[in-house]
Length: 529
Image 1 (cartoon, rainbow, N blue to C red):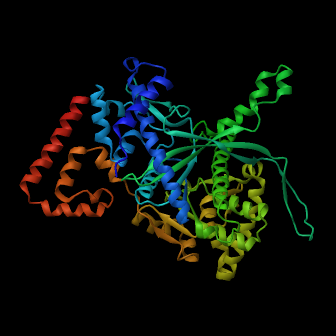
Image 2 (image 1 turned 180 degrees about the horizontal axis):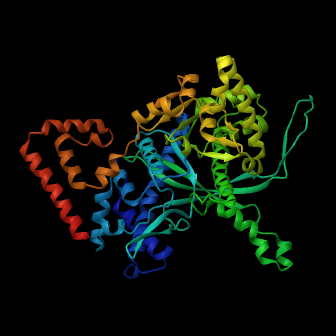
């Protein structure tokens, strides 16, 4: 189904240039024109998003939420045009205006939301879920600087921050009515409830505000548009007016600057204590904002948490969001009064964990002292999770449990006490997967064989893949046309069908055309460089 309409597209395109940029089209730069096209395409995405939301509301399906510190989504204009099936229509319209679409595509800055395979995997999952018409959504941080820009100086690589214009990006939709209040720091006050039971109170906490922004994720075919929700950190107050009036202007805005640094840059250096704390605060900020938002959406149609795991699945992309285990428990137990066992059952059935590394020394750990300072209530909950888990290990392995406990405990006792975030994720999730068959086997046999022995049914594999929409259709239109002419276009959403090309292995006409496409691509590459 094509949503493209020349008239409405032209109106949106010229409206942006004239009324948003305040320019005549003859004075618009290529960057201006790229934003104008993106803005016009964004209107199509929003219309489909409303239709998608209505479909989800009517069918009330289980929803998947993918938590990741990175989302390497790449350039969005060309991908959205291809998935909507209007790339050629748009190119024709722009050609009539004397504008080359490919030139505009090259103007777009990559959203700086990741820098490697972790983020690309997350982005591919969102693309795939939308293409399969599944209610799958992402949660991340709206970094100002999330990638580095490489420059060569005197033959040597230098790295510079790569800023992307997230405050003016045509793809970023600010959700002005959605603000998430996040408690942080403070202390635990030991109290008892009316029945004399232990009732810890988290007091003297500071408050962060998470402001929501969405990037719309379109599926191939244009039927479904989901969203990637990104959070920007804001201080709870603009600044202390009394301090400002006393003349200490820098201290007045100091707290605001410190709070908003949380979403400034991906992976701040952890070589110093302050950097370690900021990275932990980032991870907690992502987790707390995401869980709050997920619960808010769930409660729009549900009054009880008993069925949360039947309507919600939360996938943790590596250990960075592992604090979700403690945060979900805190929300269920502290804020909603669920008994521990019931809350734990819901939590473990709701959460899943994707492992990305086989190096034990690369698995994320956090000093207990820093965790206690940043999220004291979460540390309490983690200790209780660990106590109960160790008891279950003792029950299962008896006298042989001591060496296992030293490896499986969430708390690493040697030297400075550390929290092992991978152990927390494995214990707190019902499913643990690697990202390739051999990798998943090594997770079970080499990385955490003790956990595999304890939870034999918990481990599985989900092979990391790429989307053919971007890596073939978008990158190589000539090859795409050749394949479609030979076997049709179903392979674009079902890559297993690419095997049908085996029927053409001895087809000389096909092979000649294939070689010509490769040669033409190489000529184009050489010409452009």
